[in-house]
Length: 60
Image 1 (cartoon, rainbow, N blue to C red):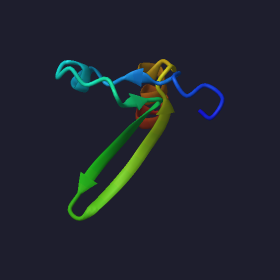
Image 2 (image 1 turned 60 degrees about the horizontal axis):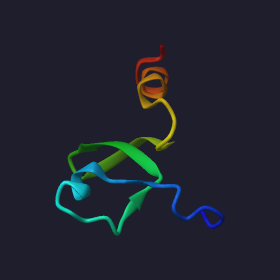
Image 3 (image 1 turned 135 degrees about the horizontal axis):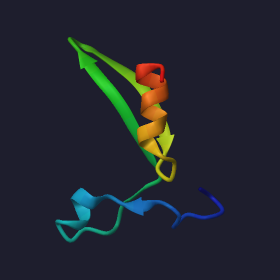
Image 4 (image 1 turned 180 degrees about the vertical axis):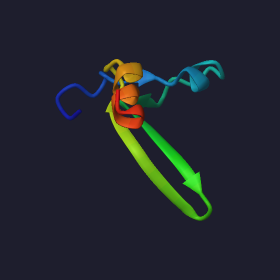
């Protein structure tokens, strides 16, 4: 990220509000169980998340 700071995409949710100051190079998939947060995946936003999730969560 230090070499290409503008590589991250804009968050669709924030862009819909007219906010373009924040970028997101990564996506975090997590689950909340009681008072615990379990992180399943931290993925580069440019990868095919559907296939990564299938491999990680479903063992496909």
